[in-house]
Length: 347
Ligand SMILES: [Zn+2]
Image (tube, rainbow, N blue to C red; front, side):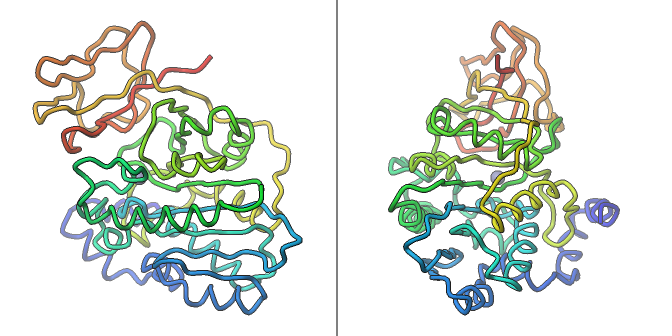
């Protein structure tokens, strides 16, 4: 698959044509189109309570009130052009659909920005992953705001009720190449409560680095961490055309999720991600914002103490007293939003 993907990216016009010509697996096409009809029938026939609270949202819970099963939320396509997780999850769900009684957790699946997935874009009006909060400022009228509301309502419902082990992995892919091809961002609210369990899960899932973000954020994983879930935004490789991704990057994650969904248990595992914490956020205040490095800069590229990171009119962002690593540099965001994170090694 890797070589096929390589040629797709040789010229822009060929990418769309290749995507249209490519025969997608039925399960990938269904999940990308937010179609849960087959899988919902399969779990319902196996005796589960199945709910479809909004388009692209599936909840499968045990019909028995005696059982207190872990609650696992898996979300994909919060950014519409991030297709590795859609393919990976489609295959996992298709396998479970064939033997639905194997499901050992209460499961919620969210296909995030359905309109953007259909167009192969990150978003339509505004980044959905900044809207999981009540204060939305100038983004309140964006097309994505109503979608965030629907997802938040269904999520609150899923994580309400008696105490259970709650998990949320919001699955993404990065725009840029990364020195750690798989990494996670852990929201502030998850830091004190379930950080050990979460780092254990991420290590099992083959995630190489974890960034602890102490700043409040309007991300989906920050929202779910507020319910006591062990939550993270997980980056699995890079954006690519649906159906042409090399899923090898997500293999360890897929295997771990598959096992967890079927056993509700995590086997002992010593490998943990390398841990970073956020040193500073780069906020793009005006359209004069310029970064001191090029578009090709990889995630986790090191910048020396004191060096200039970005300039925005009179504001100059500099590296502090220790080496900082740049993550998610994106000067194209709207003014007022985060244009990148600077992280330092923890401990
Ligand atoms: Zn993303």
